[in-house]
Length: 354
Image 1 (cartoon, rainbow, N blue to C red):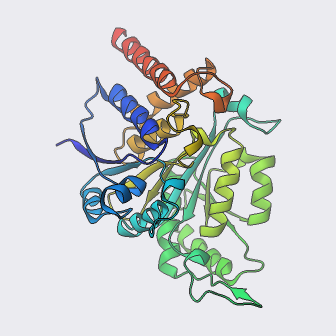
Image 2 (cartoon, one colour):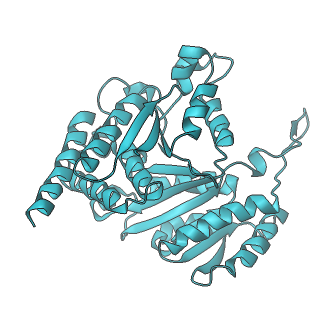
Image 3 (cartoon, helix red, strand yellow):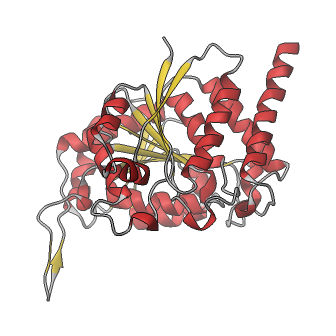
C-alpha cells in the first residue's frame, strides 16, 4: 500500500516551492521501492478563497488519514481584512493533529559556510525541540489594562514529559546529547522543567544531559554552535532561539521544520513566510521545501537513504553556485530545482554502474 502524503500548497510563493519539492520527491523515489500517493487539500488563504475558512474539516480529515503532511508557506496581505486569517489555520491544524513539538534543524554544511554571518565556523548540525502548544502563548488568564498588563506562563507535567520524550529519542538517533534551555534561576516553570527532565533522563542512560540558561544559550549559538546536538526548550524560548539559529545558516530559504505529536502524522514545512513581494517572479528559493521533503522521508518513513541523496544534491547545487538571488545567485526557482534533480539522477546512475 502506498504511503499517503497530504499536500497543502500554500499561498504566494507557496505553490511555487511546493512544486519544486514534489518534483524532487518524484526524482529521488523514481528507481526506489518507496511508493506514495499525493492528495492536495485546501488550507490557509487558498481555503479562505474557496470555502471561507483557513482550515476546512475536510482538510483535517484528509490529514488525519495520511502518513505525513507537507505544508508550504501561507498567508499574506490579500487576507488581512478577513474575519479569519490564514495563520489561524496553523494553530488550528496543530491542535487538530495534536502536534505539540516543533523540531527545527540548524545545519551548516561545508557548502553553506560562506553564507553564514559567523566569521569562524565549522560544520554545525543541531536541532531545537520546542514545545509548541502551551506556555505563555496559551496561558490564562491574560489581560491588558490602561495601567498594566499580564500574561500567564503555565505548564503541566504531562506537557513537559511528552516533548521531553521526543527530544531524548531524537538524541538517541543523533549524538546522544540533550541541552535543556531555561531560566530556572528566575522562573518557577523553568524549575519545574528541570525537575521533570532530570527524572526522565534516568530512562535514557545513553544520553548526556546538560542545562543552560536561555541568555547563555543565545550567546553560545553565535559563539560555539557546534557544541549543541538537541536543544530542548519551552515555547517562548524556542520561538526566539530557533529564529536566531536560522540566521547563522545564512538564509531562511534553506531551512525545513517538523511538527509532531504522539500520533502517526507529522507536518513538514519551511520556516519562512509566503514572500508576497517575489511571488510569481520565479526566484523563490526552493531549498527549504526540498529539505522539508528530505526531513519527511527520514522521519516519517524511515528513508534516511533517500533523504541523504536529496541533501547531497542540494549541497552540490550550492557548491556550484546554482542558487537563487537570496543566496547571491541569478538562477530561477525551476533552474535550481532542475540542478538538484540532475544531481540526484547522476548519483543514481553511478550507483547502477557499480
